[in-house]
Length: 318
Length: 318
Figure (cartoon, rainbow over the protein chains, first blue to last red):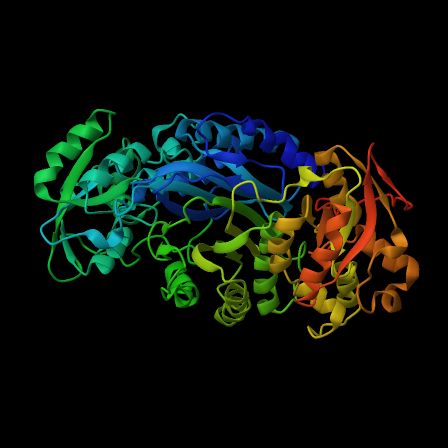
């Protein structure tokens, strides 16, 4: 058994070698960290909690749990078009399992490095296995992508492909536990679309990340922008292997309502679509037109499922 | 049963009436909040998680759970001498209990108002009852109180009185569940010493908040400052009613190692003590000299208990 301090120091401290340009004046190890925000920028902050058995399977590899907990928070910064800078992380564990924590930290720190985000605070407590990650980023004033910015006539587009989150969960539940499996990887190792978010901040009128499912998240944009949408369901890009696993209807259902995709759903003026597609293609990411925004309300073009989006309190065990 | 969004909206949204000078460009309701930090200030950020059955009793009143979860995080800002500005909150709940959440929110928001901190983000998930609060504050550059700033010859002083956290827990366990009880109140409704922290940022050389117990937290200061300390155990101010409840030895043990007091332990040059005491007295808070810092290491003047400070992984149920 390790005490709280020892555990924290062992796996938080290594990430805090002070490097240039991190904005970290004082990292982990005091009552709070001290940060130096960039003059003239706005702060963008979000928190997401992942609970074992609700947001990730109890037997998920620890490194994937660490990656995923940070990824879902970073996805919120991507949706705002922000540049990630710092994060804080709270980990609750039923027992102090040093090997698990080391693997968890490996997944967490690897994504920190890839996303250029510095871990600047955290705590470790006893409790049901859960991870809460606060991410902080920066964005130029008036540049952040809000849900409310969509306009009638805008094109609706998504990055990457949808349904992989739900498909990966289904594959996992069917016994496929290989992180290299394309769908399992989409579910347990989602890639926050940070680079796309930065590009789209210059070109899109609104954005949201698809965590609750396309229909539910589109609903949030429509509500915030006071508009309706006409979806072209056949145009929705489906994750690799999804139809094989779930059949055509199941795949469509996963893409519309499965959630956990962490792709970006954006709206943009039609004349900007080609430029946005070219920018995203430069780093290998598709941006697919899937509909239009219209005056009014509601979503046309799909049979609405009874359950639109994942609701945590009604969701089952992964 | 309420879905995640409904629950969040019902209790997070009311706090977000935009007022002047909050620095909140965009509050709860998008993928992330947008904040406008004060030019030239450093950001001070900390996170603390409170888990039912570990950090607060399962039957604690919901309003106290809300207050306490925020208070323990704000206490970290107090210890840095920072001015609190914003917070984010993650709540996990086994069932969606609207009445409990309403009471929880009442306690949380009341302290938000008192501390002038704006709730700008959060999430609600299914899980064992736990609250994770990230607080963000600001401080003038080079003004933050660090653990490493103590100097040999400095006076060691504490705000308020100690042992109330452990005493309140003992009283609670003995069946005293009245929040008006002085010790129970100290345990369940701790008051972060924000005003004192702001004053002491001008006068003290280092500070830490007493969450793990006087000896453990003093140990952190000594380690960071590479010094030793000579404590005057008889000078330690004990919480009201503590000796009556626990006896003299038990009270001293609670003050030395109980933790959960959320008072500030500060070091300051002897010639500054009177000024600091006068400032804190102006808002009714005592600052008591309890020892000196010396060259060397370790703590003299008290019989060291075998267990110095609360270690969450070895702690029992409250």
